[in-house]
Length: 210
Image 1 (tube, rainbow, N blue to C red):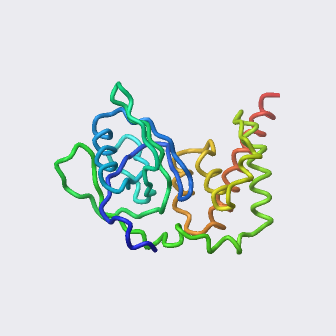
Image 2: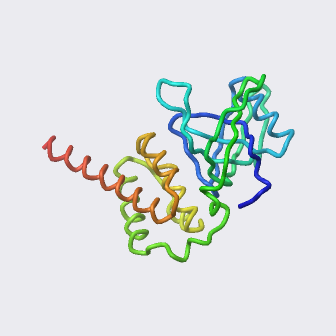
């Protein structure tokens, strides 16, 4: 685990948005408190955390992902366009009291110490990953999502899996379950189960409508 990762980080809570290590997340920042957050991050080392906010609450989930601002562009109207590069998932330990508009948390990376490495890639179960890719193509097509699969193939294998988990049209709770999967094989199996459930539901709907 990289001991240089910060233990106190600013948090950008969003519902329905998750991202993973080694993936990129473009964000359009327009709310003042998050403009402050981004400006402070740019002045420092660029680190910020993303977590899902819970429904009808100011609470956030315990697990999120640390990112680093790899690119930013400030617009004349005050908005800031940023690209966030995922580094490592974290577990929230406590909230930090501050006098800022945005929230900060004390976090720990121990549960996800392999996120910055690719040491698990050799043990990925090939049958499951082949099935996941085939089911994903079918599922995304049924949902009307267009994916450049040729470009997708150029990603590293863990990036492919994380990207599928990130963009899959599933519920917030299911996305959170995927984010919290400790191993890559667990993530593959969970995502496969979720996709198969949705495909079964879609087939059932078609039968009902006929």
